[in-house]
Length: 142
View 1 (cartoon, rainbow, N blue to C red):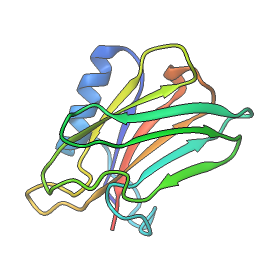
View 2: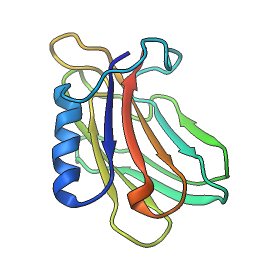
View 3: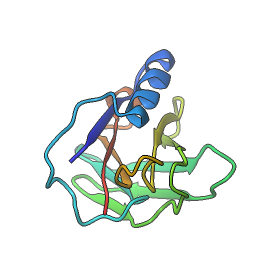
View 4: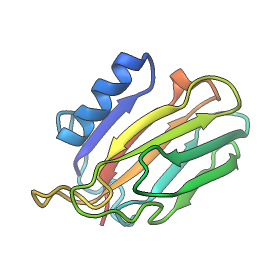
């Protein structure tokens, strides 16, 4: 399965990595990783030891979706078809972990690209509410 990874951090790295993910410039992973999720799904995964309040919004004006949740330790919040986009549309998500720090942005293709690439699922994984420990990943959806 195509896998594009984006690690939160400095803003210069944020922009470069998010564009590289959509362009297919980041490493590929295992084909069978998460075939059960439709494109546009949002996964928010807490690998830490405490619950974290998370807010995910769409940064672009064309689509309107939001998630506000407290994600317990070891749990994953799944929002199937969080974004229903048109093929080729790049969607930017912004995640706020806790109440401090800057939102972490991520770009992906919920419906796939114009060149027939598969729809993508956005996955945010974190261990604590400090934004530099969060990782955005785009995985192949169905």
